[in-house]
Image (cartoon, rainbow, N blue to C red; front, side, top):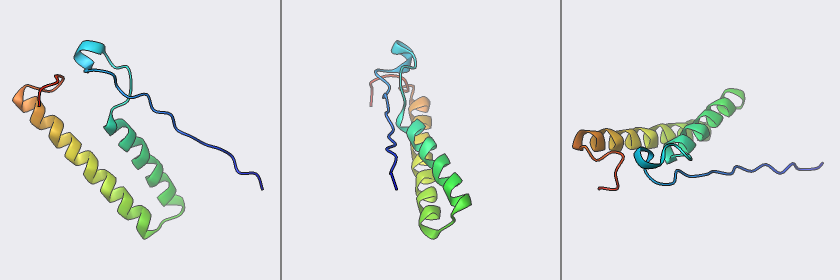
Length: 82
């Protein structure tokens, strides 16, 4: 049996969107794609490990969304400020 080679190439966002426009992926984008793939696989081949990984990705996305909300509230989203 021949094994096919599959890969993912990610072009990360270069600079802040407000100055550079959208020119690549954010970490959240990649997590959302991974989450979608795991959910699809888990429908076909459900298992505890997939379910836990799905939960952890959902949690990671939630924390990144919280970070963004906090940055928006402080008026620093879209800047290099901490």
